[in-house]
Image (cartoon, rainbow over all chains, first blue to last red; front, side):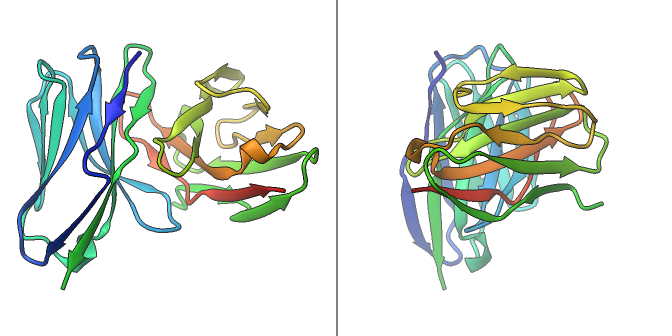
Length: 111
Length: 113
């Protein structure tokens, strides 16, 4: 059974730093790996979707990588800003087309 | 486009009561799903639908019913609420079978006392 883990559960960094959020999964048979952002009291916003045949995707200051062989994905945020403060969730789509979710990393960017 | 809308935003129920959480999307998406989010855990899939008239169970379907009579609407019914169903519920939709980007509603925070 696929399991998705995100470590750390919380992270606080000063504004301007580059940072990496980690996501690991136990079964490499995935269709894609997705990163989402969740703001308090709000729904989830899709950030990046990496298909299983891809190694990375980029959107603005965000870059997500995927290494299926090691069961890892990372979300790189460049030049962090206070507006990046949110909870970041990753989800792996398994062989049944179901998304299996990590518990998230709560990110705080200090001004 | 309004995207994915959910009502109500907040709800308090007593044990044993029933209610329906509403979800609608105006993007003509075929795929819709319901998740629950509990503290310290990832989202868990309750039910999903790949098109009007077709529904299937997810990881945690017990205590919930769904129907999909139109492409736009996908209501979630709690038959007899229990404290274990206290959670935040999210509805999502996507154009395809799940391989494409998913769009989420703002959520419904449900408390069962």
